[in-house]
Image 1 (cartoon, helix red, strand yellow):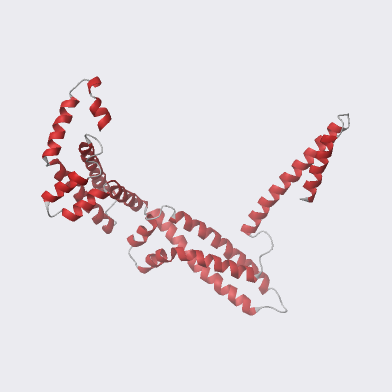
Image 2 (cartoon, rainbow, N blue to C red):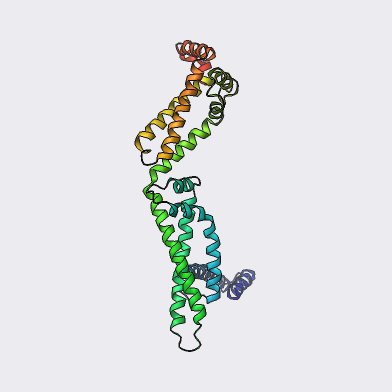
Length: 300
C-alpha cells in the first residue's frame, strides 16, 4: 500500500508540472507503475486465497485447526436430520431422506459446498499431523491424539455426505415427482382444502367450490379455465405415476391421491348448472368471427 501511495503521489506531482518535454514521460511512468502495483496486489490476494484453501502455504496451528473443526461441526448441524434419516433405514429409496432434500432446492448444493471445505480441512489436519509426528523433542502427543480424533470424525461425516450427494443424483426422478406434487398443491391449494373438508358431501362441495374457488370469480370464463387446469394437472400426475413413481411408494400414493382429488373437483364443478350454462355461452362465442370474440380473448 505504501508503494501504491508513493506511485499515486508521483502521478499527482507529474500532472501539476508544466507541460514540457519531461512531464509526459514522468506521468506515463507513474501511471504504469501504479497499475502494475495494483494488478500485482490483486493477483497476490487471489493466489494467497487459493493457497490458503488448498493448503499450499504453512499449515495452521493446532488450535486454529480445532477452531475450524468447531466451525465445520456447527455447520453440520443443518444436515443432522437428513443424515439420521439416510442412515436409519436400509431401504434403497430412502424416501424420507429424499423428501428432506427435495423440500429445499439448494439443500444438496449447500451440502456439496460444506463437503468441499470439510475435505480441505481434513487435508490441512493431515498435513499438520505429519509435521507434528516428525518432531523428536517436545512432541505434543495429547494434541496429536486430539487432532487424530477430530480427523477421524470428519472422515466419517464426509463419507456419509459423499454417499448422500451421490444418492441424490441417482434419484433425480423423485425430485421431478416432488416438484409436480408441489405444483399441484400450489395451484389448487384452496380447492384441495375444500375437497378435504367436504368430499363426503357432494352438494356442499359444489357450493363451496363455486363460492370460494380461486378461479371462479377472477374472469368471466374462469371456471372453464380452471377445469382445463385441473385436466392438465391430472394428466401430468397420471403420466408421472406411470413413468417415475413405482420405486417411491409414499410419493406414488400421494400423487395418486392428488390425481383422484383433481378428478373429483373437476367432476363437482362440471356437474353444476352454473358451469354448463357458462360452457354453452363459451361455445356460442367460439363460433363468432374473430373480431366479435373479444369476450373470449380477454376474459379467459
